[in-house]
Image (cartoon, rainbow, N blue to C red; front, side):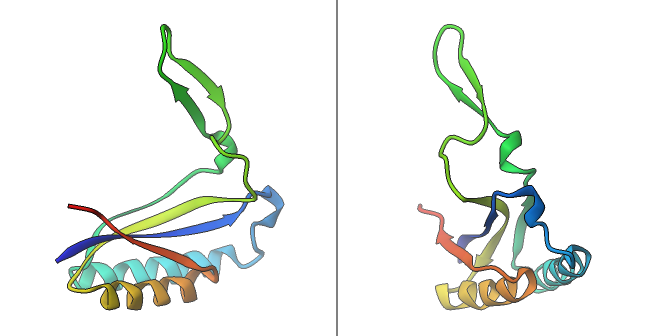
Length: 112
């Protein structure tokens, strides 16, 4: 078994929240329940808007700056950590996630 991170990225414009966000969240919650029932879900979480991020750089004292580290049009909005027998199984879950959120889903295996 391998652990995979399925992550979704969304546009970094606060007004880009879709009108049907409640419907999307219902689909996401249903998918997460199916993952849990299949004993595939390790952990899941959604993240606050990237503009709320803080970047910490080592130093004396450490430097804390506002905003995401990279300037980009999209940022990670949430993720699932899954345990799957194969990359094909992880891709199947990712396809369901993409359908639920209406966005592409990135799939990456954990090393080691």
